[in-house]
Length: 387
Image (cartoon, rainbow, N blue to C red; front, side):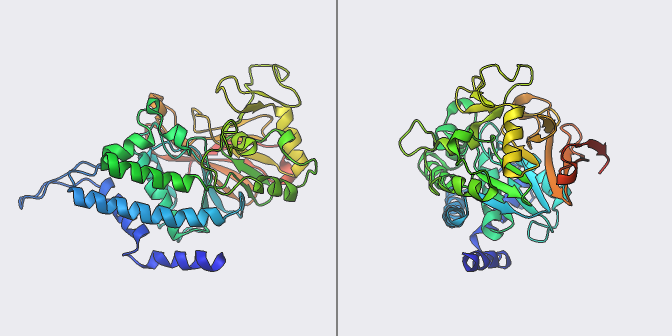
């Protein structure tokens, strides 16, 4: 596997490789072009302009080629990844290409390959935002170029049932069709979902911080042996290829569904409200479960973790420290569904979680930090300072 990854990483030096061609196309998409006196047509920033059908078919071909390669890479990865620090962590993006590029320009302007940090994305890359296709292209192209540095987890929107739902306005499927037409668009949508089918479900940073999209799973789904190694083995029982994770469907997985969909119990309700053993029904979503602060405390202590970092819910400042300061909810898409929320990401480094906040109005990052070292796990503090 290591040789295969190293071979693929060599593509970064080949400017004609399919991943680099996708990134070159995205640079064209991002930049505005003025019409020239010679007759060339201009275009606005963050648009494809008026492209010939043959050009869009060529772009679709590159997408399918890269998606096929990335599917093979992700299918070989463990279902629970080991991640060393330093590492940037990003939460929900939801088709917000503007913010993704703003983070890039502020934090890894020299490129992911030259950054000393790795990159962990917690899922929900598509739907609701205008640029689901472009966000997916950015991520799979970088995954193809840097398979060891760019790590992608699966969120609840990385399923066909979710990213074809027209109510998300627009969903990934509709974005694909709008860009490429019905026939080619559906083929591109299926190729991207082929990657989503095999994405890992969780990650552990420095054996201290447990990361997943939704939340911790019900302990009844795990072995009674409470060690990190056994937890990794439990998560490894989830099939590498999981087209339909919904446990109510054939071939689904209760454990995968919990990791993708679970939420913390609402703080305004008493812990015992509908919960037993730290878990209860997720009435707000109608699927998955909620976990209490006591349930989280037991999970973290049992497996030797200091914190949980998860995504899955919008937060006004882009992040929120919750459940006795042992959990962080992270959201990396500002202006979500018309709200004036900010976007944040985390830099995990030197025993700390540094929050980097992209304010919705100014786009200037601000830096915050939260200690997660074991020695101070019970005395966490969050402080803000200018970046």
